[in-house]
Every structure is written in C-alpha cells, then in structure tokens.
Amino acid sequence: MSSTYGGVWGDPALTVDTNNNFYYIHLNSGSGSGWWLDRIVCQKSTDGGHTWSNGSYFGMNNPKQQDKCWPIVNRANNHIYATWTQFDAYGTNNSSDSSIILFTKSLDQGATWSTPLRLSRRAGDCVDGSNTDEGAVPCVGPNGQIYVSWAGPVGLMFNRSLDEGNTWVNANIFVDSMPGGWNISIPGIDRSNGMPVCCCDLSNGPYRGNVYINWADIRNGSNDADIWFRKSTDQGTTWSARKRVNDDPPGKEQFFTWMTVDNVTGYIYIVFYDRRNYSDNETDVYLAASNDGGQTFVNIKLNQNPYTPSSSIFFGDYTNISAYNNIVRPIWEDENGSSGAKTIYTALIDSLYANPITWSGGTSTDWNNPWNWTPWSVPTGNQNVVIPQVAAARYYPNVNIAGLSCNNLTINGSASVTVPASMTFEVKGNLTIQNGGTLTNNGTITLRGNLINQNTP
Image 1 (cartoon, helix red, strand yellow):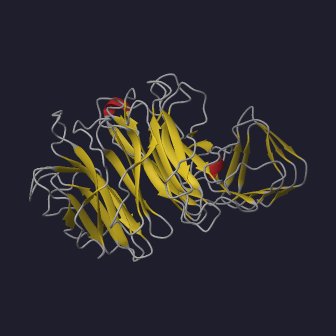
Image 2 (cartoon, rainbow, N blue to C red; image 1 turned 90 degrees about the vertical axis):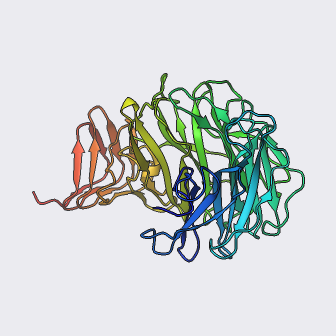
Image 3 (tube, rainbow, N blue to C red; image 1 turned 90 degrees about the horizontal axis):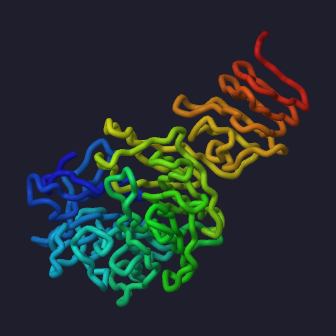
C-alpha cells in the first residue's frame, strides 16, 4: 500500500461503513509529499481490501505534528468521525510546546474532511508521556451523539457532541485521575500505555445508550497494573464507581486493554495481556465479558501457551477486539523473546446462548474454557453436549480437569474427545459416537446411560 500523501506509517486504524467501504487511517512517514507526521492519511477500499485509493488527508498544520488517530463510522449515515493528538513539536520538553486533542469528520465517505475542532480544553505537554493529551477514541450514540475520551495531565477526560460534531461541551468532563498516568512501565515491554477506550451500547437491550470507558493504570502499585471500567447512563455527565475488570488477587500486571460492545446483544468484551499466572514476565491473554451492562465481568484465558516478550523489541501499542451478534474476535500479538519473531493471533468465539451446548473450539483444546463453547458457558451435568466436526484451524476438546460432567454426549463423525490420564469424566445420560467419531479415554469415564457407538467394528 502506498500514497502520494506520504508513506504508510504507524498507528493503523481500520473502520468500515454499511456500504462495505473500508477506511484505513494511518500516520504519514514523511516519504513522498510532506514530512514525518505532518498529516493523517485516510485510504479507502471499495473491493474488500484488494485495492486501495491514493487517499485523502486531514490535520495538516505545518510545522505541527499529528499523531495517534482513531476513527468511527456513524452507521446511520456513514459519516466518518476521527480524533487525534496534535503536537507543537513531538517529543520535546520545551514548556512552550503543547499537545491537544482534535476532531474532524467526513460527510462524503472519506473524500473530504472538515476543519479540525479542538476538544481538549487543557493542553498537555509534548513529551509523549502521561502529561501529554493522547489516546482519543470516539464512539457514536444511538441518536447520533459523538462521545470521546482521552488521557492527559489531569487524568481521564471526556467530551461529547449532540449535533454531529459541530459543537462540544465547553468544559471537559473529568472521569478518573488515573494514578500514575497513562504511560505505564511493564517489565519486558519496551513501552506500554493505559490509554482509554470509549464505547456506547447501540443495541435494543436494557443498556442501550450506556457509555463505557475502559483503561489501565497503576493505582495499586507500580508492579500491579490493573484494567478498569466506568459507565455513564446520562451521556457522560456523571460516571459510575470505578470497577476492576481483572478478577485475580492483587499483585500481578494486566496491560494493553481494548474494549468493544456487541451492538446486537449489548454485551461488553475487553481483551488485555495478563501475568496473573506467573512470577516472571511470562504473559497470557485474557478476555473479560459482561452481559449485564458492566455490573459484573467474567475472565477467560485465551492463549494456549504463555510467551515472554523482550524489552529490546518494539511490542506495539495496541490490542483490539470486535463483536457482532455474539461473534467475537479479539486480536493480540505473541512475541518470541529475543528472536524478535512476532505472530498475530485471534480466538474464534462464536455465539453465546443456545441449547444444547455445542463445542466450537475456537480458542484451545480446553473443555473448561467457556469461549470454546456455543453458548458461552462450560457444560454442566444436566446439559446435553454435541462435539461437531470443526474447521482445520480449530481444536477438539481435552477433558483436562477431573470431575467434569454432562448429560448426553454426542461426538459427531470426524470429531474427537480426549480424556487424558488421571482425569475423570461423567456422562450422566447416553454417549453417542457417530460413524467416524473418536473418543480417546486414557483416564476414567463413568457412563450412566447407554453407549451408542456407530463406528463399524
């Protein structure tokens, strides 16, 4: 991908409208036209990403620099909104230089952009640290409201527009002090941030219109970064008590969080890196989910094996996650230590509530992981279970915790279930193994009903 408006640089952000037009927004590397970070570039694809336009741009205000942009599409009219940070001089500690949050919009599918408006009433410095205004993420409300959160010298801030970005609240709304600031030091990570993510519930459920903000900070100690959440039921005027999202005991680090709301179901999903299971820099990836408007969260480990990053290698600045109609796709990076090898992963989490409980295997072989099931729950002893044939990129279950059970268990053709050595598993109803299905029992299975094995002897 290339553009005459400057080379493709960092902070990539992708959004899509209801006409299946994709918009790739990124920084300018300074090659070709202009110089480093002199504008934000938006390139458009109308064919599913096969080809991309030369693009358009916004924010050019020489000699100032434009950084860390995030877009959102208003799906009622396909207008695009974007927020970002403008630096007088990036990376300087000169007290006369400042950073501010700006907003622009496109009413013609990315062809042109409005004159930027300033959202942050108090400027930050230009150091690119906790006293810099950064991390602005917009979202759209059910009646076209635009909500934006960001972090800066006084903590977590918020602004809103009720007229599609033409006017904004004069005094920014304070949300949280973010003790320690957004620039968080994590061992083994070259740099890390706790910048906020702002989302709104557009579903027709009971929490429609709620505004949510998710972030990380070190209020519990420099070696105890946690993931946090607040919500507003009045368009951001007031905010709920702060809720800790990670549900482990104190003392371990969670970092690089991102949030989304399924705008069909209203469920909230938050992905983050997590070290709760280790005493060193080994790192897992967790997903937290709420189906009650953020009153409670359940935490699920997504990755199969931990990894140990190296501080000598740039780790990146983001995770991300999307969800629609119970289809959830988090994304994260696995870094292989000093070798520098990086791999991008997702988990295939499909659907939440259905009957019977059906294995999907999108995350791992772990029977006890809710995200491997449709609906989103580990089967109990009174529920029927079906193990279907799954795609090659997915997994079949191992009963890896003793004492698990279900009612009827059906293993479809070409599907398999493994009960490892020393594991116990109880089938309280019938066990059906269809032709081509496999049950590998190296442990102990207790069958209360009938065995129906359709495999040819």
